[in-house]
Image 1 (cartoon, rainbow, N blue to C red):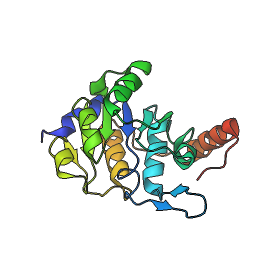
Image 2: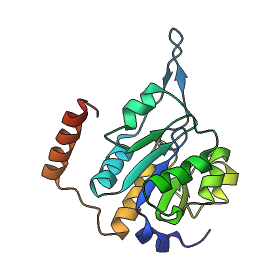
Image 3: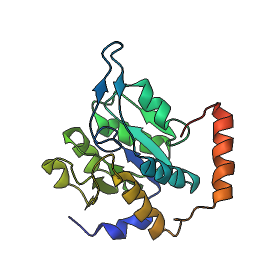
Length: 189
């Protein structure tokens, strides 16, 4: 594991896996509809909003596919939600290309074997504390927090602090949030 703190100042975008990163990995399957239910951490969500408001590009790259994922992240927490990504590296590289970032300018957080190729190509490879051993072995930083319990917030806060952007103007936040919700006619929390 290298000294990851030197990489924090060069990050311009974030990309995240969902299950095991933005959730604790648990999924409830509703018996009548088959819908998959996940729980998300509100502190991770606020961290994502702060990064979004600070001009960082945010992407979700997940092998999962659920309308609940799209509804949770699209517009308010991420600029792009890419689902059904079975081979994540080409998807990640396309995300970088579309947004004019070099892979080394993007922090990626993953927790399981399908995330390893992206973790080996991104600028800052990060995983939650409960990631699998193989993922931990390729990461620059292992969060002190498990997936779905603050690992995403930990990463974002460190990057924003290193770049002098960890601040929340409550009035600006309310204005921004109202504008986003009005633009997309949503009421997300």
